[in-house]
Image (cartoon, rainbow, N blue to C red; front, top):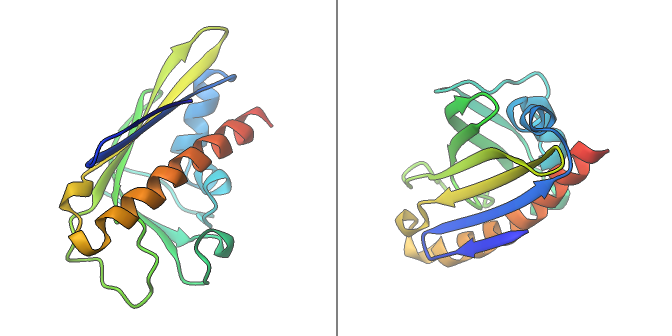
Length: 157
């Protein structure tokens, strides 16, 4: 796994021992994405310009009202999926709508041995209010490491 971090951006990569079309399916199908990510996205889809929202597993955030809430930005089949969201938006009393969301981009490239290089980049942390910027960055940096392992295990299962 490759790790790159600045103050504004998190970048993580992993080579998954699975064909590109299989990894793409796990990223681009909302229900399957929810399975490995830990969100209930049953019956939902990903489409550019569309909001997709589902409850996140309680074990991930510590209470029952955390949401995976994204607006899909781009889908380039077999290559790229991106969305915008409010990072580490887990306080049910907080109103995150006035914050500028970060951009999360998944890219896929072929890797040796019929594997797939999956890279996730989340950028825009410098636009988060200072009071929660560092914690959001720290938690998502750790979170993407966890999620890349999750998708790799899911795809190989």
